[in-house]
Image (cartoon, rainbow, N blue to C red; front, side, top):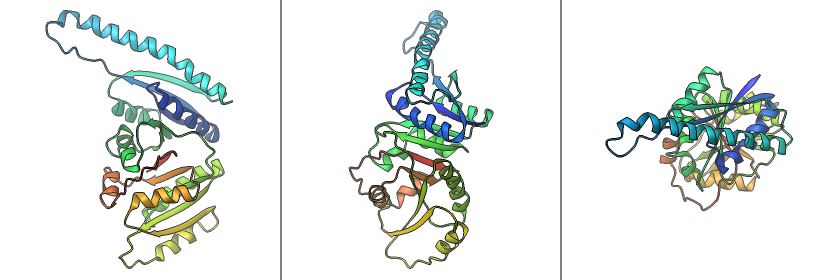
Length: 275
């Protein structure tokens, strides 16, 4: 059985993303492992060494009590969405969030990570300088990031961004495998600078590799990567965006070459990072 890791802080953002984790688990016949990671705060005043043990024990107890109260809420969300049959286990850990996510992903052979992200209205804000970015960059697992204002909708259309490099073929195949389980169509989008001469031979190669697939191939001339992606999402009713993460720091490099109009358009679809 496949495994989905769901890091949660029990916020509304996280609970909203949990619906995607449940739906994905249902499609994959997978189990969900929820993970809540906490850190003990060091007192910011002096002469409390004799009380440190009591302070830490109190903080740990408070975390446990909160955890104990919140876990049934996740089960109620599953029941409310007719997904109570999904196997769910729960883990409470002390430590650093990113480090613990990466560790448990490796130890438990996790197949997908699903997590929410808050307060972003642009692709740049979603991807740069967030915990989600670090997980997408550093994990070898496929990660699904769910913006806070994203309301669940069936994943009928997936956007896969590509430069039609051969290195994208395996990532597209992984995305295709997921699309088949979700009964989804894939749109491949290549954004090219308009002032260069382009050789489209690789597009033909991609079409040959995926000739019997439910995949369409598009190329758009634009200097603004972010704006072109946003326009395509809106015009084509995209339900999920998939990005091939080629290396650490991928997102920083991606947006360095974008003029980025920073359009005031909410990103209200989940983002899938594929290694």
